[in-house]
Structures are given as structure tokens and as C-alpha cells.
Image (cartoon, rainbow, N blue to C red; front, side, top):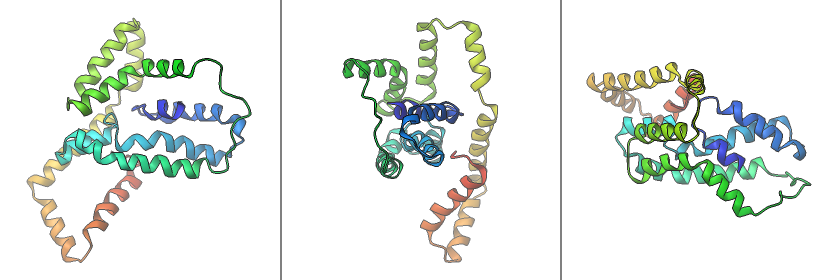
Length: 221
């Protein structure tokens, strides 16, 4: 359940939360630091192809004009492949813990898990199934959680200061402006023609250019 919970967190700095959880959960498994690092990175990112709360998903939908629901459907095979391949390499040779499962009904644990993540599931349902723009479910669910849990105003302000990223907002805004500039100046048409004249296969460009940008910036977005 820990990979599912932490993997669904669409917040910057998820590694800060997931790394201690991986460390604590794998203490008895005697895993190497390299294996723990891989698992920490893997189970948080397998969802990045399909969850609309990840910036890359709704940003791709905005740039390409493809509905979020269709984009998520296309990403499902990638998520399944990432889960399967990561599980094979990440858990190969890992022996189970000596301690058994905690006492109690397993269904009770599942019910508690669903209850705790109900706000997140509501966002996913409204965004994917009903094609509601992400900002509205996120805003409504956030307000609902604050009211239901009677969170103090001071706590809400502290969380807002800690997690609202002006840099990320400017990055997304800059990407959209840059996209419009390229389209209005027809730079993309000229670039495509030039690269085609050089004999570079389109499939190579589709894979290589985004990969290089991601390596340089360190941002999936």
C-alpha cells in the first residue's frame, strides 16, 4: 500500500516523504542503498503516465489538444509496463520479511485506505470520467478536506507557503507562451522541413528531443 499512497502524491518534493518510508519499510529486507534508491524513484513515477494530477499529463493535454481522458487511456499500458518491469528488477532476489502481516481484517485496512484517499479518488473520477477541468475538482476537494478536518487557518497558511511554487507556475506559463510563439511564427513548420531535409527520421526526433530537454532541465514538464 505504501507505493500506491506515495506514488499518488502529486506534489513537488514527494521524494522527501517517500524516501523515509522506503527506508523504514525495507529495514528488515537488508536492501542495498542502490536498491532502495531505485525502489523509491520507481514506485512514485509509474503513475506519471496516467494520473491527471501530475503536471506533465494535463500540460501535454493542453499543448496537444488531446482530452485528458484519452491521454490517460493511452498511458495505461505504459504504467502497467513500468509496474511489471520495475517489480521484476526491483524485487529480484528480495526475500520477504520475517514478521507476518498485522492482526485484523484485511478488508478493514482496505476500507481505511480508500477512506483516507477518497478526496484524491474524487479528483481522478471527475477529471477522467467526466472530463472536468482539473482546477475545479482540486479546488473543491481541497476546500472540502479543510472544512471536514476543521484545519486551523494558521495550518492552511503554513501549508500554502510551503507548497505553492511560483517557479513551477512560471515554468508552465512560459511553456505555453513559447508554444504560441512557435506556432504564430511557423517556426515549427520550418524546423520540421529543415530536419526532414537532413534525413533525420521523425521517430528519432520524437524520442530524442524531449529526452534531451528533460535531461538538461531535470523536469518532466
